[in-house]
Image (cartoon, rainbow, N blue to C red; front, side):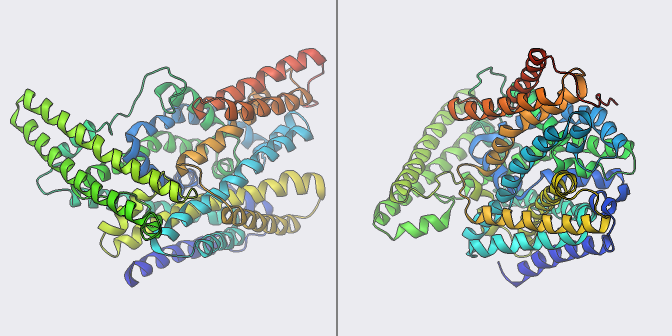
Length: 570
């Protein structure tokens, strides 16, 4: 990065944050601070909901996911439109009718105080950990490839977000997210255009997609019923519905976004905006990763994309072996490139036999090159077990830094930071809001003035920022980051959703039964996660069903009366 890149990066981020704080100035009323006084239109709601879900992990990890595994990850989102329709039809009118600040207030109204606190506590645990990953994800990668100190990158990102979130509350979050999404969209379009520009001049988009297809990178759907396959149509639709129903319906980081709308209609339209555009957006990002893969069939890629880790060991005891493997990989890649060109020529000739033979030779060359790459990873891991051999998270940022012109590099790094701070600001605001409303104002110091509660909410938001920064400083990535976040959510979301479904639809189940049922379901999900190798998406319906079933059984066994307040229906 040069001076121009830093000007673009710092200028865009400071301007967006400054605008948000300016728009939110003078917010001393609790309703204004936490709900923006419900003066936000559907467009801002839609972009804010999308920005909250679109973290830096989306742009660092998703293209790498496609580079390694193709478009199959898009199936993870197939259940999302269905979930959003249900949230708009059922959850939104209930929350707005009761004028709650948090989703967990409703549980207190429907059941009792302990169930409210359980729902809030599960959210704080899951989202508190996720916020640490939200900071850690861009910091670990950017510090590696740009040479920045990792701890300072984490602290700077966290402090930057804490300052404007604490200053302006949800108003600052919602207003800044509009412009953060503008930076994100601009960066995506620029990256896509640059990938196409960097492809060989005689390779059109159709041929590029054909190359991606012959390597299996365009296989977007899998109709198999194998529960061990991570992404299938069925896990995406069935498991995805439960995952996103819980995320959008019960996760305060999203609930706060659409409760800021001027009416039920505005909130619903904001959600429908995401129902229409989220899957195309994810598909676009995955397609970008598939095209980066095509680019690296003609331009030699690194044998290991985490170049900092590779360079650190290339001069050590295993340096000679790593350098030899790198030389072998260069030769294998040159052979593969020649085979790609030969296959394209055979395909253009219309000779089916020649095309099949060329494709077979291409796949053989690709297998040979990938074998060397895997051997290099194994050698690196043997030399240093702390090095993560899954380097997919480094693919896109490597392309950006090596192939983009200056100025666009700054824009793409700004995209990554914009995504990080937009998601993190929503998380911190929701964590502070939930702690203030569901614990402090409800249990610790009820009956305090608005000014007092706003001050407490600010301090609690800052506290969660410190917690997130602390977790990020000691975090360690176990696999691809985008999967890590979804796995973490799937562990907790099912039982929480079960609590809300019981509240909405099972009138005779009371607070004690659902409280115990949720704890049992959460324990079951944790046990299954560590003992079975099923796709994590299935944990969502399992946890939800277990919570509902256990609640019904316990209510029948105890013959307990329903909670003091009956269920509220739309």
